[in-house]
Length: 89
Image 1 (cartoon, rainbow, N blue to C red):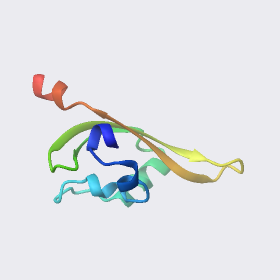
Image 2: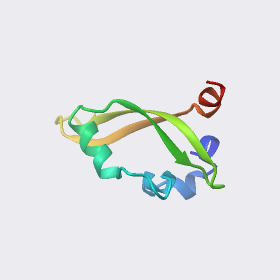
Image 3: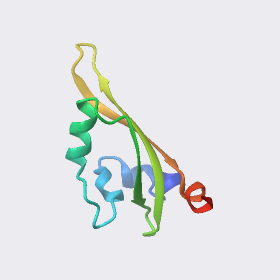
């Protein structure tokens, strides 16, 4: 979060990922969550906003994380900045 978005661990931990969404983003975190849990979404491209208000294009890989009993306990999200790649295209 610090390298990509400018937030320190103290600022980011415990916050919703929606703090990174542009104001007019059409999809809620609950919609993403439901698609990931259903196995319909494993990666996607999105616009996210850093601490300074600058938009970044990111490639997000996501997967449910299961506990020992098989129940989903969390969702993993890996964000990769692809802003420069898309600008070059």
